[in-house]
Image (cartoon, rainbow, N blue to C red; front, top):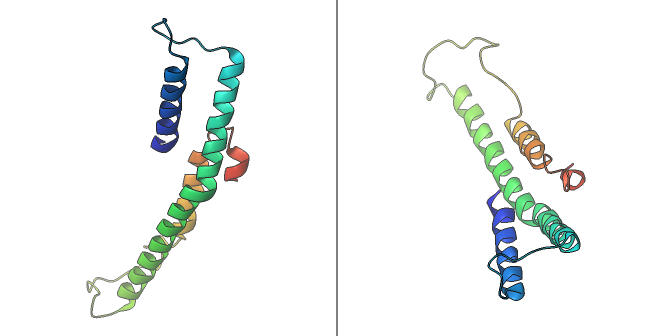
Length: 118
C-alpha cells in the first residue's frame, strides 16, 4: 500500500511544481487526471510483476522451510513435548498456498490491476 501511495504522492508533487503559478491550489482537468491515473496503474503493474513477486516468492520460500522444520521437530521424539497428539488435532494445510491466496485476494481488490494479479 505504501509503495503506490508514495509514488503517487511524489508524482503529484512533481506535477504541482511544474504547474505552479499564481494559484495556491493547482487545478487539474479530466484529461490530465486520466493520464495521471494510467501512469499510476502502469507503475503498480510493473511493481506487481517485479518487486512484489520477488518479495512474495521469498516469503513463500521461508514459509515452506519453516513448515518443513516444524514437521521434522514434531516427528522427532527428542523435541516432542511428551503429550499425546490426536490424528485430527493439528491443522494440516499448505500454509504457503493459503498465504498466496490471501495476498492475491487483497491485491486483486484494485480493479485496475486485477487481471495482472490473477
